[in-house]
Length: 100
Length: 481
Image (cartoon, rainbow over all chains, first blue to last red; front, side):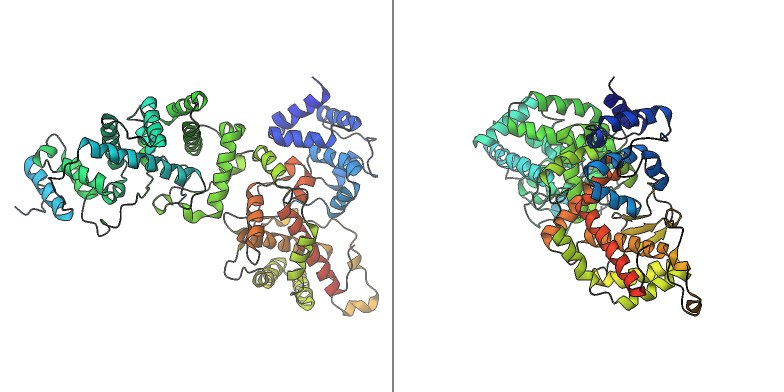
C-alpha cells in the first residue's frame, strides 16, 4: 500500500470522511511528497514531530498549538496551503481559522 | 326506514341505504354504460396523460411539483399490471394509438381499485368518467354490498359522502398516502424490480420512469430506516435526484401537499449523517461563481451597502455593553442588524449551547432559522491584551473592549448574514438562488478549509463579520491587536 493509500484509508476509515472529502483533501497535499510522508508518520505515531517540515514559518506542531481545534488532516492541508496559497492561509491562521 | 340510517342489520338494507345516499349525492344515469371503445379511448387518453402528469408533477420542475417521493398511480398500478403490459400501454400512448380494449379494461379496473384503496378518492370524484364507472358498480345496490363487511360499507359511504367540492372540475388531484404505502408495499422488493427494469430497458421513457421510481423508493427506504443513505449517495443518478429534490423542497416548502405536510419532516440528524461532499463534485464544476471563483466586487458591494447604514456610535455603544453583558450585546447587535437585512419580520432566534461540530463558535441553522452561539469556543486568542494597558489618566475613562468582544460581534454579524442569505431578503432572484443552492450544496471544512472559506455564502459572511469588527474597532478608536 502506498503512503497516499494509507492516508486515504485513514481519512475514510478512521476519520469517517467520505471518499470525495478524502480525495479533495489528498489533492491539497499529494503533490508535496515530504508533506505526505510526514503526515503518514503522524498518523502512525499520533504525534507531531518536533522538527517537522516548515511552511511559511509554521510547522505542523506549531500550527496545532496555535489552532488546536483543527484536525490533523486540516493541519497538513494548511502546511501544503502555505506553499500553494500563502496569502490565503496566512490570513486564515491570523484569524484563528474559525469555523462559523 | 330512514334512508340515511346505515347501521341496519341486513346487508341488503344497508346496501340499499348506501346506494340511496350515494345516488342522492351523485346523480347519474344508469343507462350510460360505456362501450368497450369508450373505455379504450378513455384509458388511451387518460393513462398517457396520467403518466405524463404524474411524471411531470413528481419528477421534473413542473409547477405542480409536490413531493418527489410520491408514489404515483403508475407505480401503484405496477401491482396490477406486468412490465410488458405497462410497456405496451405506454408505447401505444406514445404513438397515439388506442390501447387494446381488454388492456384498457384491465387498466381502468386497476386504476379505480387502486385509487379508492389508496384513499385518493378525490381523483375518482372529480373525473367524470371514473366517477360514473364507480357508481355504476355501486349501483348494483344490494348485490354490491353482498359479501362486504359493515366496515367496508361504512368506508364507502364515508368516502363517497356528500361533498360540496364534488363537482369542482375534471382535473386530477394527487393525494399521497404514505401510510398506505408503508402498510401495503413491499418496497424492498421493488428496489430490485426497478433497478432491473432500469438496467434492462431500451425505452428511454420507461428507463426514466424506472429510475424515478427507484430513486423514490430508495428515498422512502432511507427515511423509514430500512436502508442507509449510502446507496443513494454513492449512485450518481440517485444522488443527483435526491439533492435536487431536497433543494427544491427546502426552497419551496409550499410545494409539499398539505395532506402530507405532517409526514414530511426534514430530519437534520439524518441529513447531517449523509456525506454530502460526494454530491458536491457535480455542483462545484458547474458553478464556479459559487465555489472558488466568487465575484469579490459583488461581495464588497453587498456588504458595504449594509455597513454604511450602521451608525458607528451605535456599534461603540454595543461594544461597551458586550463588556458588561455579552449576551445582551448579542441581542442588541442583532436588533441593530436585522432591520437593515430585511429580517425584522422574520427574525431568527438566538440560542446558546453546544454546536454539533465542536470547534464551531457560531452556527446558523436554516431549518430552524436559529443562530446558536457556543460561548465556550469563543476564546481570546490574544492573551496579552494591549487594551488593558493604559496610561494613568485613562483610568478615569471607560476601558476599551477586549479582543474577544470584537470577535463575538464578528461572529454574530457572520451568522445573521447567513440568515439573510437563506431568507434571500433584499437581493435579486439570481443571487438568492445561488445562496440557497450553496446552503444545500455546502462545503464544510472536512473537504478542505480553503474550499470552505471560498464558497459564496461563507466568503460573504466572513467579509461582513470582518467589516463589523473593523468598524466597531474604529468606532472605539481601537485597532486590531
